[in-house]
View 1 (spheres, rainbow, N blue to C red):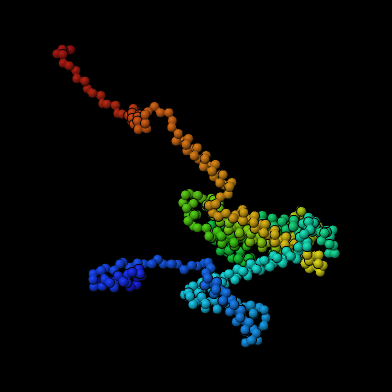
View 2 (cartoon, helix red, strand yellow):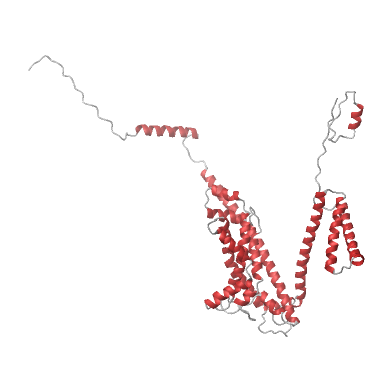
Length: 455
């Protein structure tokens, strides 16, 4: 009697064959296992689209019924929140009619994440669009980018005056801050990760505490030390110092997180080959974390470029163009935006929103430059690096070919040459004089022949 595993799936003809062959000695075919079909994670299906549409319509109708008939509710925010929660609940119920619990959770969380992403994108588009729309009147004039406000007043039209002095001041201040922050921040992050010492934990605690440092405190610190104690004047250099105090903990903390992601096997392999620690850090760790370090610099720059109070305390205010960061007051774009917007004149408000749009464009340009410099992942080389590697490979190939090139030989093959060389060395060893002289033989007594003669 043949035993058939009922848990396996049989072909369509299998039951009939089993029934016809029962008791007749006819063997049933082998059971066939159908391949597992994984549940699709992404993509749109007809049932999924219908569930979304039905849940949205049902949630909206339920909310309208609650706010209009059943409960004394009001307010646009409450209506939106109630409609969204009803939509999620009804969508979970509709999905549960066809899927299991895990699939329901997956679909609901997918909707929640998509909603959060749409909210963030909508907020970003709203901020950028509103700022550009309110400043469009000033952005359409070329003098807005080439002139300063020295000869323009609040009642002057938009054809007079501009923000050239604020743009130049922002670039100078952020350049000074980056010059100070980037090497110090990356070096401190390397110390915390690659060269842990006695004070690494203390330094990490101070860095995390400085991350929440108010900007006004940084400005007051530089103002008290650089201007009051040392007697220097307000300048763009002092503002660069204050901005670097704000940027430094951001760069250190972000670089610390990025350097922790470098696999330890890379550093262990480099050190196993005999490379010292500084060469491992320079040639292995930093190139591997290059894109992450660029992101850390971008985060620090975005924090420092929008500061207003440290610039007001350390650089002062001016309406004229000043390209010398060591002397004289200097203004930045955030401070110019603040001074423009607080005026009641429509032209000054338009200049303020135009300055804010230029500031966002400047941040975007710096972001693109940083991504171009450090956006390549580990192992991806630029065109210049590829050409340099190819040139070094050609030089190595030529050197190896020169070392292994055939030379003139008096022998037919290498075996004869080796045999002759061994014979010559053995002969040289045998012919070589001994270092210790051999002892001289003892004198022998020579017998005298007896001639028979007597004296």
